[in-house]
Length: 319
Image 1 (spheres, rainbow, N blue to C red):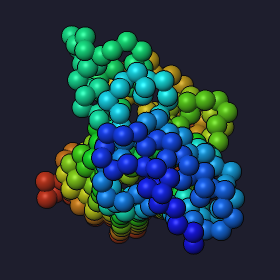
Image 2 (cartoon, rainbow, N blue to C red; image 1 turned 180 degrees about the vertical axis):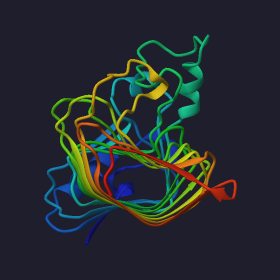
Image 3 (cartoon, rainbow, N blue to C red; image 1 turned 180 degrees about the horizontal axis):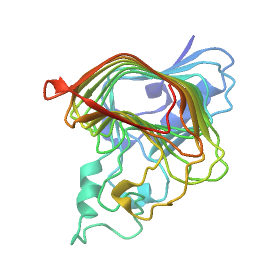
């Protein structure tokens, strides 16, 4: 395995010198290598601006170990020119490991976008819900063979969100909280949409989150689907909605499509899920009336509410 240390490409660990180009050079070197590669980010603070690490790589396996902190710039104008700060596009066989941190400098920009605040400079562009920072921890979309391992995530939205075109995703030993859980979706944003398949979420912990394990789609026609998903070995502590399939997703009930979801959901397994819910309904399967959920299996699921037997809600679902 060939190793590429970002320091050898000019990255700086003082948190003030721009290392964006150094990270891009290290990625391009690893991506262009025929064998397995390893990118290392050592301890320290690396200032990195908007960065898209693009696929179609020669390397079949790229492991990125982050032991330091990757820091976003405070220049809102710079961030506003890009859809994402740190993204992977069309990648396959990429793993991110280590005990490092992504510091997106979120509180500063949330404060400037607060009501009655005029502190944001012109040129900033924030795509977010009206009353939420919309801070997904990790978003995976149009990607294959991605692994997310041993990662603690604290955020104001989904800890991990999984979008269309995701295949062979492995998530293991992730701790989520606060946040909105691990979510497949939201789906059915578009009429023509790729599916989500072969996703494994294993040995996860959710603490004081809004959701635990969730699949969500808008109530509108779509060619998309979700199949071959395994949720195994999750521990919930004071989670509002531990297990959810919501095919009438419409946050805050604003501008809801009011149609029927075309997303086809099948072959979903929940196994060894235990813990406590902060609401009486611990399992909610609200599936499409046109495309009922099929092949939904639950095994050894033990969820309680205030030390009482919890409730479940099922609509248009077949076990």
